[in-house]
Image 1 (cartoon, helix red, strand yellow):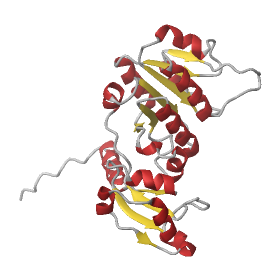
Image 2: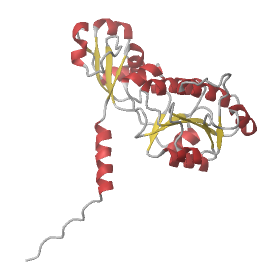
Image 3: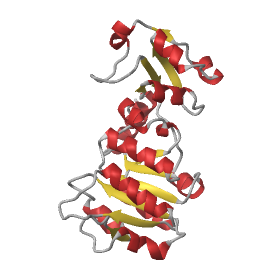
Image 4: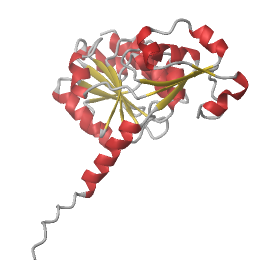
Length: 269
């Protein structure tokens, strides 16, 4: 008696990839605060699932865009029991408004780097995990016309309500792309003509000196987490290393402040 051939067992990496894909498809984010919710409702690219508001917050949100109104109906709850209806982190300043959404899809790195809106200017973040820092960097990236903020998927802050609130609406407009491997992404950008500049306190050249001879070129600024800084492979991948000069040997900048200064400098070229 013959037996039907057994199916070949899938490799572990294939199984893990499929699980990650299913998890990503099921992932949702709760945005909170009037500004973040209002901007998400106005974004036609944002898939909206559930809107929970107090009557006061609904009045302050103003008219909900037709596309958003067709997708979600406001669930009006009592301000005193708001936290029971929405799974927000403790101490979240929600102002009586929360919106459950799907994470935004920004497309491929090549699409953003070559055809994205704004100047050929990118920011890459190496292990920057604080959502408040990333939110502030997204704001600066939008102000100075960068095409995208890039970060590794496993060592960076995902889209969260805290990140969106700090970004003050920039999360809805400024591409935030999380990649599998940051160094590989930087190498891909170099192949597209980008000059990759790592910000590092031990560098021998000031950022202005590094930027001067490459004015008009496509630039990717790479910043690391405060303390650890850039990882070794990230440092090795950069075309140039630069520092932001300080007036004091004891001076240092928060990563979001350093990003704002670096973006301002690079955007003037």
